[in-house]
Length: 85
Image (cartoon, rainbow, N blue to C red; front, top):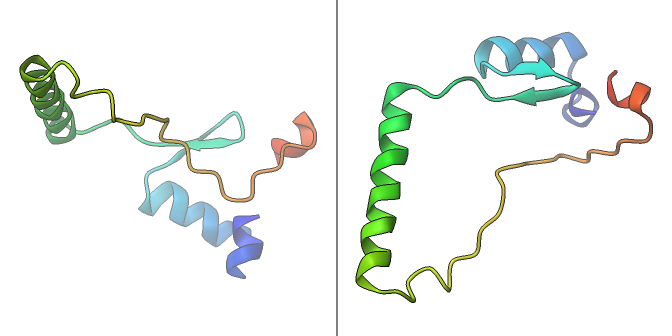
């Protein structure tokens, strides 16, 4: 699907995804690589900031809308065997 929409070969898309973007194919889905130490520290600092803000104002978290980090580009899982292609 990605190769078709970008008018590229499947091999080129695979090379970009695996070598350039460091994604791994797992169960017919690409997953991100392990976080770096800097990324982990940034997440910890951000979480501590949120906790401190919530301690100061109990209503702080009420207007926050949450969701997952999934991004799907025209994903259509017709069959299990088709989705593993």
